[in-house]
Image (cartoon, rainbow, N blue to C red):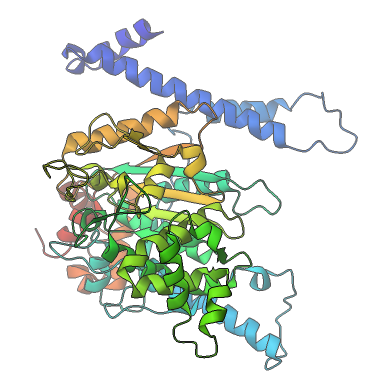
Length: 544
């Protein structure tokens, strides 16, 4: 098969056929196609095995040939020739939050008896059963960024994450904040729902690992932000780290974790993480039935003296509780732990690690972690300490820092080439296997960045490690899915231009359809932008 395909392709591609690596290119392409077909065949078989047998129908009866023909066409159509072009849609983050706010207000009025009209809704209606959302997510920050994507903020030249927010700032219409839902975002959501069973009552709960890659400017940050907003609307507790480049080098100072030998703390970053989690999901944590932490659980992350100080700080402002009563208490809520962590640098790392441990091991609410600029964690390190290297020349790997360790262990990626010695075991401290470290219910989604100063070979090695785990899953580890975000298609470019005109971005603000409805203008903008979102927006600022 390989020889036949190689001969036919060589006859059609005269230039490519003369390349020294032509045979390897054909071999890799053929392997990818065969793997794709095999995966589709497995999905069809799995779907058929799950289909219920109708009454009076023999289980051994053959499946209609029409279905077999349809399945066969879907399997062998590897180029998507028979697929209908998908029309992109936009998710308005502000509108989604306002809609949920109105539904929750309506439900509250109905319960209080202030509104007797129920519009035919009962206890089983979506309005009554949909997850509640904290009031914090109904608002926006001072820069106009919706809190649904908190702590994502405005882009700065030397700091910040992505340029998606820049589009919102440049738009004339400030009442809409849109994110285009692309195939890659749908694929990520499908993997999360499929692995974690987030949308099936009574299904077996699990977890998913998703690695997002792509060229610079194709929309990785926008995709991850859309996943964050969608997960929060769906009732997930979300830890969102959009600025990996800042976190890996601007931690102020680092110190050894005296209670957990071989690990290190970033106290100021830990305080920041505690504040972010409490601000965004404080109501969710307080509403969890299993949201209390005992002293026994705290002992894994805090010393006896630190636990005593945690309890003392937790009740420092409560005059109704005496010192004897504080000493006799055996548990604290997750919200109390985070509050203590916000106010104490020496306790922040232990408090945050304890809370993350509880969230990773519980099955009451799906817990999702989204990390952008993930390849920055594998670049040359910026944290040094004499306890790690007496000559202070070797940087501390980030999977030895307590606030990053649970997430990096959960992903379980150890590339062959990295800026620091990130390995599965280091001295007397070993990384926890991904099957044990990953959350019981939820997902961890990470994305790379091509906009940061990270060596390309490090990013490529990390991507190769993810692809290797994705294709060589023996069932012992949780599934890892690699999603490659492509450049904008012709249809997506046109719809982005429609969106720019509607929201009033750049010169399209006064365009009145002269650009978006002109096929030659659309094609020109696609060519000069290369199908990437960042350059497309730049092209719409001034006429090139």
